Image (cartoon, rainbow, N blue to C red; front, side, top):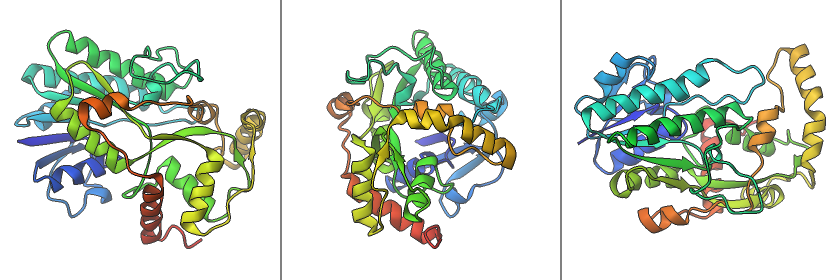
Length: 326
């Protein structure tokens, strides 16, 4: 059986491709442009194309048995790329319709922030409503994408939804936003932290959870593939132990970030560089005290490894890439 991975060159996608290959599965990847660095040397069937092109999608899904839809665009900047909505929503619609027409199994990748988080002192679970009015446009687009999948399930689509948490670990080629923050902390570029609470999960565990969702997930259900919720100072302390590097000694209240936001945006306008803080970054940094993955553990056999192992392997990856040389 051939598995199609849309967005297979991305942060999670390339790791999923590797896990599938390790299992002896045949893998096809749909990505725009040429073969990305993250997939070089892998024994895959590469299909150059866009999820926004129905013809490209049709050619990619033909002859497959399961489709992992990961193609998405993350944009937390003040001036949003209009392609974000197109890819996250209309791209999802095209993949859904292609799978529905061919009666294919679909694993759709969303986000745990695609659901309403408030009140934050209550556990975030799969039963929460979709955040269709979320101020962060990226998370709102992922919520809308879920409605497309769920509506199609009412028409017979065989699909499950997975909602990953904040991912760390190796094979982070860009690097990701979290990866870049860890590198900056290692190099001493972060003098102070904001008092944030977030869940962290190893990208390899998420990929394994997606494969289990394809095999065991119930049609029309969503599964949180998240990790442990940890305060930023606890995370920094553990990271300092792993790296041997001195970490920031304190975290400022989150409201300080909002107070610094105008300065960040003004500096960005003057320097023509990306702002160091945006409103959507701050919105994305707010988490429930508990983000439950009990359902995935119970129904999919989903497990997570210790954060120390994930950080250790992430640092080894950054070092291999030469990103910790300063």
